[in-house]
Amino acid sequence: MENSQGSNNETNENQRSNTLKGMFLVLMNCVLMTIGQVAGPLLLRIYYLHGGERKWLNAWLLTSGFPILILPIAFSYLRDQAKGQATGLLVTPMLVAASAILGLLLGLDGYLYSFGLSYLPISVSSLLGSTQLAFTAIFALLVVRHKFTQYSVNAVVLMTFGSVVLGLHMNGDRPSGVSDGKYLLGFLMTLGAAALHGFIMPALEYTHLKAGMPITFDLVMQIQFLISMFATLFCTIPMIINKDFQAISKEAGEYGLGETKYYMVIVFAAVAMQLLIIGSIGVIFCSTSLLGGLVSSLLVPVQQVFAVVFLHERFNADKGMALALCLWGFASYFYGEYRATYKRSIKARIRS
Image (cartoon, rainbow, N blue to C red; front, top):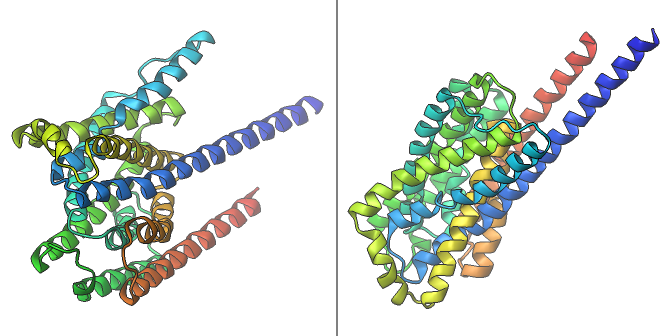
């Protein structure tokens, strides 16, 4: 009897320990998402504002920081090797293939986003980007069979209205030198990037569910490395064709902020966007794609504040209305997820 109680206590302690580790990983990845999502787009927009014109280079910067992942992967391997638990490469051929497909989609998504950002202010692109929550909800229903509730429907409708408000009142905030046609094209490309990103997140979750192996820190890092590597390769090919690499030195010499700051902008942008990718993928693997979409949408007001403070963008009534609709949609979606989680916990307690 005492042995049985002892084993139960040990099991409960292990469960609590695993829960705390899981919560810590989710929190850490949310912090990385916050740093990347706020700093990354700001730096990418600064690249365009002061003379940068290479859209494929901008897209390449979104994922080219992936070599920094070698550091945590190597550290983890050496630590496990010292303990006699080194596992080496964890990804299976199926995960490599899935990572390649997701990487190519991420590369395309990066180009759509970079193209849109070249013609849109941060305050508009971030609001449009927040609609990925609506797309994530739709694709999560189709890909991983997350239920579509009245709250998620409400969120989709509200965020759609927010995009419509921005689209109908675009003349008042068009950057100088950008025609109506270019602004509309940037608008549609950014919306397309949000839709594609909304598909990638549930696809990542589906890959996680089909992996057939426990999700560990090492596995997540290796998958992140592969996805970012394939996305970078996707953007590297058109850069070679367009001779973008040869043009970097010339562009740096003519950059409005000076050559040194040009290289600082692109390097820090690459690091910031890699932090965003690490955080996003980490949240999905440690939790769900829906939480990743929620965190991303919740950071929109923060992006708005930074755009107004550092880039001196205007925040007019149309943006305020669109932001209110997006936050309303976020609140509706979050409340629906909270209710669903609470009901599941009640049912689990009744069963036990």
